[in-house]
Image 1 (cartoon, rainbow, N blue to C red):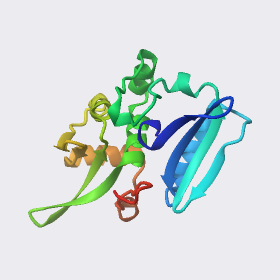
Image 2 (tube, helix red, strand yellow):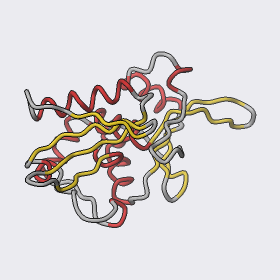
Image 3 (cartoon, rainbow, N blue to C red):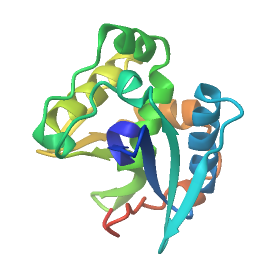
Amino acid sequence: MYLGDGYIGRARRTYRLQVSLHERQEHVIARVAQAINVHRPGRPVGFRRRGPVTIVNAHANSWPVLFPQHGAGRKHQRPIVLEPWQQAIVEQHPVEFLQGCVESDGCRHRRIVAGRNYPAYAFTNHSPDILRLFVWACGLLGLRPRRANRVTVSLARRADVATLDRLFGVTDIRVQSAVHHGPSGRP
């Protein structure tokens, strides 16, 4: 989630991790809070509202160590490279990595091709490095993503969509097909 909707900022004597999610993503908000609790048991996780956006946040001195990709400026304007220990984690848990990517900067949607309605997944990010990491993680699961354009990777093959549906636990296609809108209001 950090690579998508996350931000690490300097606070007075520590660092603050913030993940901005749409209020309709209640299950994702709960999962982000739970993941933070695993790292910092017994310490509070904050929730702030800014319009339709819920900001999940927590303070810790360890955030820059856990997320060495942290740095000044926008993520797409600086190199985003996983450390070897982070690569090992993604190799062990590619589903969770892909799910975080899709839930932050992606969606499950319907494609109309030759008048027929097909489900597909898309992941959009302006960082070429983050897009490469997404494609790499797809490869770990045997998925075959394609670049839809400069900033979007698509998974539209029936077998790939079915695999992600199964791995992500998608059971109600009507509910899951809604496009995720980020804090800016755009998909």
